[in-house]
Image 1: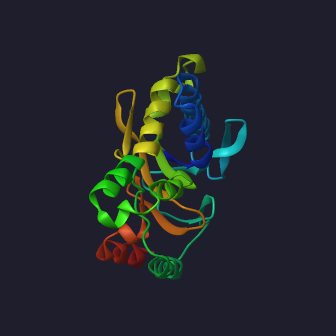
Image 2: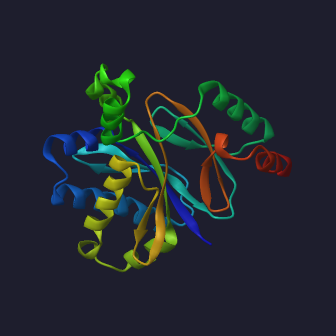
Amino acid sequence: MGHANIISLIEGPIRSFVREQGATEGFTKDLGHSFLKLAVHNSQLNGYKSSDSQSFLSLSNIISSSGSFHSAELQLFFWAGSRLVPFQCFSKSDIAFLLKLEHLVGHIDFLPPLEVIRKRGKDDISLRHSKIEELYTAIDNAYASLYYIYEDALLDFNTIDESKWPSLELGQGVLDLLLKNDEKGIKLGSHFDAIVKVGVFLKPSFAAFLWRNNGLRRLLDIDPEELQEIIDSL
């Protein structure tokens, strides 16, 4: 049991680069290095709570952190626009309000990859005459995805030169999570599911999350009885 770092990734520039120039080795390695550098930096701060970011593709704030949280902590967040914001302190009424707002906004599921949409276009007569590429454009412009990385998997990187980090492998894993949406975890070293994908969000959107028992979940995904137990414990 330890800390985990919560990271959001703006997808638009990354998807555009891959579509136009391909997932080159240099690009993939840079992505993995930027992701890992931010996570390692925050893990060294141990319990880091302020947001930080890492530039990528010469653009700032593509990879951002909402802080580092211990497995035993209970923390409430809301996603608004382009960042995940933690409540500095929260009460039963805050959870009730955010949950009510969640139900009004509706649930946002993982977005399907292009191959799925094209296949549906062939199999589903209602999609054959629609503009498949326009449907994909909505996915291609997905604003951000949300992850958390267990810091136990980062301990070795504090003493290893950055040039020896597994940046290429990590970058490929992040791209697989981002582009394929068919996996929810990445292995890092000997740690399975060291990096976990929580979801994808379109701009503008709203969502509320709870960090509990070493994991980040959306309020709408928590069983009502468990959520009530959490509220009663506050």
